[in-house]
Image 1 (cartoon, rainbow, N blue to C red):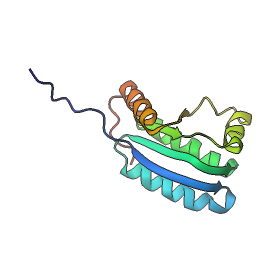
Image 2: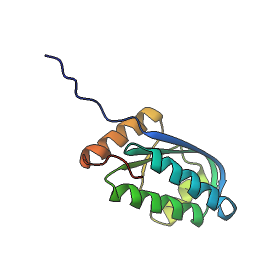
Image 3: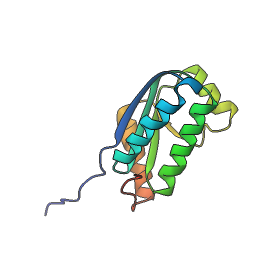
Image 4: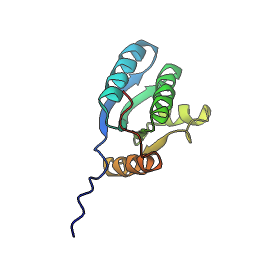
Length: 125
């Protein structure tokens, strides 16, 4: 016998870089919204090249996490996190709210594990 059960869909990966602050808030929100819309249930935000993030970026991340959870989908942050970004998550006590990993294979595994918890998720768009 051969099992033809498809594996979890590949996550959509959005690469972010530079400073995520008030000046880039609209651009960030639009890029994340587009990525969520085209995701098939799993979204990886590659924040490894983000050098700074402020409360406006955190707001976008939290809203995205809530949107993905509501749709039974998965959001994973791909690091490693810059010290300023890690500090933002720590001082706002949101570091445990997000799934953060340090490699793309780990991100795929984490997304698949999150989707297994919510097997009905087919997209957040």
